Each structure stands twice: as structure tokens, then as C-alpha cells.
Length: 292
Image (cartoon, rainbow, N blue to C red):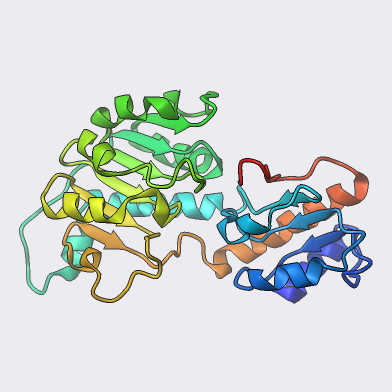
């Protein structure tokens, strides 16, 4: 990744410099946030920090309004939206169940076409998912903090209306940032508002769903199923109850893989470097106060 990001910096009109002379920092090591305080201790000229991922929880405790922060928000949205659609179709068509069989089984499944789909979150994933759902003729509702209408949605409501929306939801796609306000937003009370045959697809963060409440609902037949690309805890431990539930599809946080995302991130970094060098507004700014 270092070579690709270096090339992106230079293509955007920047030059690679030691940290004590750098005005911008492209963080290209998502798994090494602990090194950040030491690295920036002597960065007296630093103005801007670019993070490599959309969800910035690993960096949340380092956020500081001395600097301008940007992240990968929206960069990976097309890949994650495709994954959300694939998981929804797999759940509705019972592909997860057939894949576990060892003999010919009875027909199971339902149509995604015409379904009532609620997308929790109004960011890039939602914006990319709505066109993918359009050929299916779904009735789509986006639930977001601002309530500002999202293009392609049949309606957009604010988060306080989530309890009103859930009873008329066949498919709930969780695709919002994880903050103190959104952690545990899908708990037992929210799940019980959904129809008993509804499916939940989570391509955001595991912390949005109260795992024990989800396990209980799936096991007791109070929910049709769940397709989870993210879990809490993560990685999901061997032997966890979710693994054994026949109405649960789990993938190991592969909504966007390095192979899918690196080309997208390289182009994005190049554009943000160009904007930084020219004094223009940067893409995907992070609100330090909100934490995303």
C-alpha cells in the first residue's frame, strides 16, 4: 500500500517528505493506530490527515481539531452496496440454508422484488444501494440523522421515526456510522417492531446491533434472518451461537476487500492531495465533534 499511496501523492501534485516537514499525512496502516501519537509529536507543520477507511472508530480517540481530518467515506460504498444486495438476495432465496445441506431439500425462499426496504444510514452506501434495488421495484425508505431527502429513495425520515418505519420493513439494511448515539440502535425493542419474517443485513459495524438480542430473536423465530458482514465481537469467536443459527449468514467483514478497495482509495487520495495543494475543499471531511 505504501508504494501505491506514494504514487497517488505525487500524481496529485504533492511530494513525499519526512514528518517534521510534512503538511499532510496519508495514514496507510489501518492496523497500527498506536503509532500515531509518537509519529505526530514532531509534526509542527502538519495541517491535514487522511485516514484510509470509512469507519474511523480505531482513530476516534486520536481526533484533534488542531488538524483537518478526512477519511475514506464513500470510497468503498460501491463495493459494500454490492455486498449488501448479494446478502439480501442470499437470505431471501435461502442460499445460506441450501449451502449447509447434505441432501436434496424442500423449496424455500421469497421475492426481493416489491419488498419494503429500509436503509438505516443516508451516506455513500445507501446512495449506491438504491440504484441497485431499483430494478426490483422495492419500496425504499432511508433513515438518516438529517432527514434531508436522499435521491432515489421513496421517502427519507429522521432517526426518531425509526420505530414508525420498522413494522413496515421486509429488509433492514444497516449502513451508518458507528457513534455513541448509534451503538446498539438495533436492540430487542427495535427487532420486535420488525415483522417476524423480516431480514436484517448489516454492512456497517457490529456494534450497531445488540448481539445477544439478535441471537435470541433468531433462535425464537421472532426474525426471519440476519446476514452479517460485521459482528460484535469481531472476529466472531469459534463456537459463538450465531455460527449455529440456520437463519444467519455470516461473512468475515469482506464487504470491501483490499483487492476491491485499493484502486478506489488510490484515486481518492490523489484527488484529495490535488485539492489540498490547491487550497480547495477536501473530500470526505471528518467532523471531530461528531466523530465521523
